[in-house]
Length: 206
Image (cartoon, rainbow, N blue to C red; front, side, top):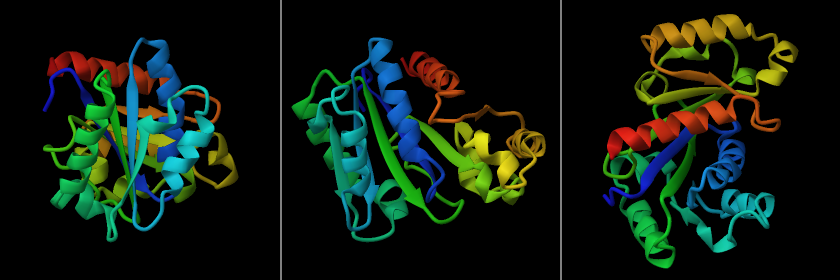
């Protein structure tokens, strides 16, 4: 891997807010002087990539967002055989060699998603409060092995009968006090903390 590029995997269940997190992080990274690009993974569509392009119109060059159509479970394309994503990343860096932050987004319906270390340097897993406070207790490698666990949509916790205090404390416990950040990506709450964590990982890798 190019030591000048921080590769970040953003995973989590469908609807947890992975795309929203990236859309909140990209402008923040640009403000910090970074030059991000994004690669999304969907089975048959370019929907996530198109959404990011629309949301970040005027902020990020549209060609810096590429969608990979995996044709099968995205888990395989980022964990077991990341060949397509490695190729997409290489093409992105050839087109935009100034890229120093490369996001890979991939969803899934369960907690087993992880990213191959051949593909990313940092793995961020996203849960949301609508899934229930029990989710951290379900463990799974996405929750326990990610470098950072993000609990998103904290603004709706009270509406879905989720005790945010319990969800956060259980997350810290099952992760043995590895980092957990609470966010509301639509308003930006907690996103700066995520960005700071990612920058700290860049320093470690360098």
